Image 1 (cartoon, rainbow, N blue to C red):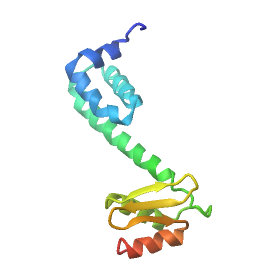
Image 2 (cartoon, rainbow, N blue to C red):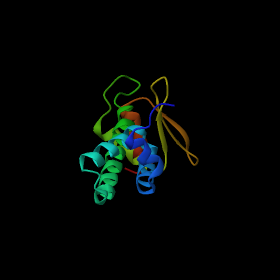
Image 3 (cartoon, rainbow, N blue to C red):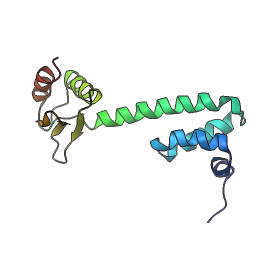
Image 4 (cartoon, rainbow, N blue to C red):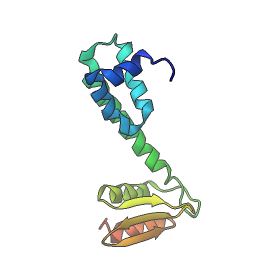
Length: 135
């Protein structure tokens, strides 16, 4: 094992830093590193810890949401996914449907009640929104 950095030691042995870092861990190690950078940039002033963590959690959630949406940028037919269709997919996800994209590029929307719906085009997605989501 190599030499431990100051930040690694703080994350491992300082209870306050460790607890804050644990809130960021689900988003990946890069977010813990960003916490360290901000903490040191603010001269290790512990009063900033809650603000740093809250802002980083918000940024990480936004980035995760944007990453999730990026997978739906093109339909199976190769068309750019319309804003209306994207809104349907986001709403479905928020309502508890599992929305994903298959390896072949088909959008799949699953719920226990309705099973899996396969959506190939913007028209399919909008129709799904009208039928299932009552849009």
